[in-house]
Length: 245
Image 1 (cartoon, rainbow, N blue to C red):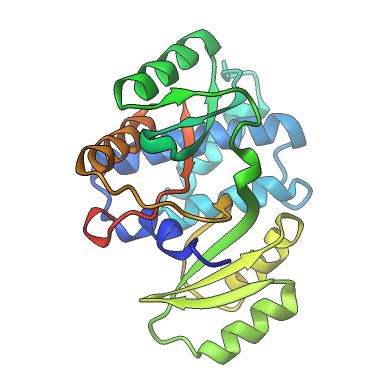
Image 2 (cartoon, helix red, strand yellow; image 1 turned 90 degrees about the horizontal axis):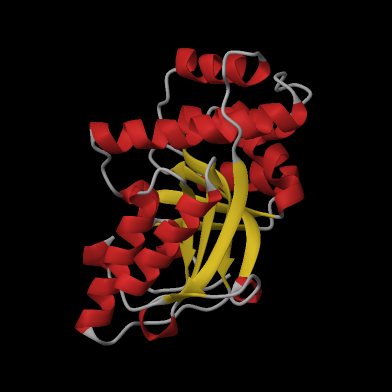
């Protein structure tokens, strides 16, 4: 799993402003809406809903917000219909980028994606053009302070985790997608503080952008994509420098 740790730490190492948190809550709300419509409002029956509720908790989303989203999606309170669309493309110097979206207007979202890639030295590709460069894995990040490493490692592995490592101030647990819920639940029940927990696309290898302009454009592309309301997740294979994380 070499090459993924620095990449997967980008999200939780950044302090989030109130505006960023509000945007994250909106994105999680869309995810809840899609999951509830597909599998129902009961997290004990709908495992994906249980996982996204845990994700909301890790992002400090108030429980009343979560319950409001569930009720809206389950009822007839004018819930929006969102479509899942994955875009693939290339950033500066051919860096691989995957963008997961939930949108109620595919034409608007497609135009936005094309604009961002074109503006920052990349281009959108065909479906499948970069997916093969990534592995879909569960990634659970646990705050390390006050945690006995061996105990957490054994609990995670016993629950079905594939990999375990210490990354600075966090423990990173990697799982197969089908074992993600069970491992996350075991970690949560163990009383550990989960910084983030999600199904992610981890690059098999990473690339380093040598040119300063390419690096700036890649950072700006990622920023613009993540700031778009329709975008849920952005995955890439760039090994970004510490100061930019």
